[in-house]
Length: 278
Image (cartoon, rainbow, N blue to C red; front, side, top):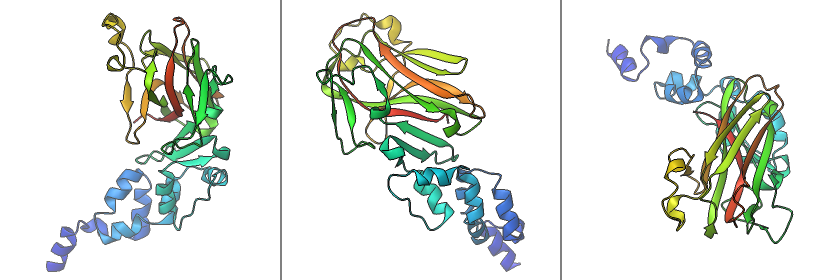
């Protein structure tokens, strides 16, 4: 009786008496988050939740191909360790893109580097500059120095993304201390995938960044606002799309403001990120 009370106090109970392989099989139908929580129940669950074959089920089916594209070798001693290593971003494709797993679900996230984006002002030195920032994932970031016609974009193949998943596209950026011209009128963001297309108004520069008066109240309530990330960068939502089986071609992401031809400057771009909607 005392032993039974001890087992139940550890969180095991009757289910703890099942074979470890049986527990691992049941856990394979959960999520990585549930798996980590279950490991706290008892020593038996902890052992079952560390099985390599179980963690491999949560890795992308093409993880070996992804690892082969890594700029720096990804070292790991178990599939569990590999899973959490990939929850931190790694550079792939010669540093043109970063990859990581969404920690709670194991679904794929990508960021497209600014050098791989279509930046309409990127070819002319007087309008832009490229430089390094130690807090950036990529070797270089791009800064809009001065331009009237603002247009940037990028694309990513659906086959790279997790199937049957709703994704959100973001611009990841900072503003230089002397940035201006990015508050009004709002920029137009669009996401296109096959026959699907969405457009929303966004504002890269909030009201408190500029000296403009409050004559913009009408569109202020509708626009998409920026948010500060844990890594110190800002992000703003550009749109959503649903990736079915990954056979719909490329997702096209675009951001532009070409109606008001006033000078715009101070936008520092780290990249375009697509990640699962949580």
